[in-house]
Image 1 (cartoon, rainbow, N blue to C red):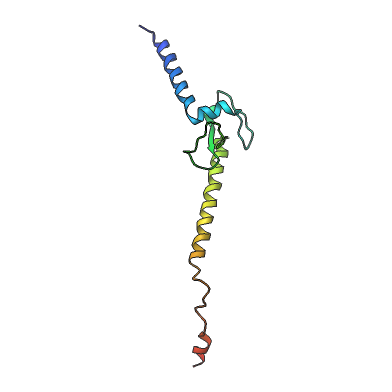
Image 2 (cartoon, rainbow, N blue to C red):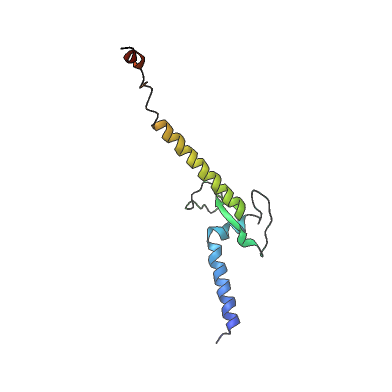
Amino acid sequence: MTSAAEQIVAQARKHQTDREKTYRGQALKLYPWVCGRCTREFDNKNLQELTVHHKNHDHDDNPADGSNWELLCLYCHDNEHSKYEEMRFESLKTDNAAANSGGSGNPFAGLGDLLKK
């Protein structure tokens, strides 16, 4: 029978292997542990604060070469997504304004003539 410590070590190794199969595990192997924006460096003590950002914002696009990933700290990652959401919102406002412009007709054309009568 194995001791409790051996079971804990075995479980930790299994979790590490499972994590390494994820895109985060792959990205951490491919890239240095540095934020791609603020250049903050990470080690095993604070590695949980380093995230994987999908450059094209598609979390299902995970090429094995890591070309759609960049490592960002929590703060830069949040900032990147905020910028993306602002851009999307501005785009929606512009699209709605164009759709509601009513075309090139002038609703007041001929109003002056009507008022003179």
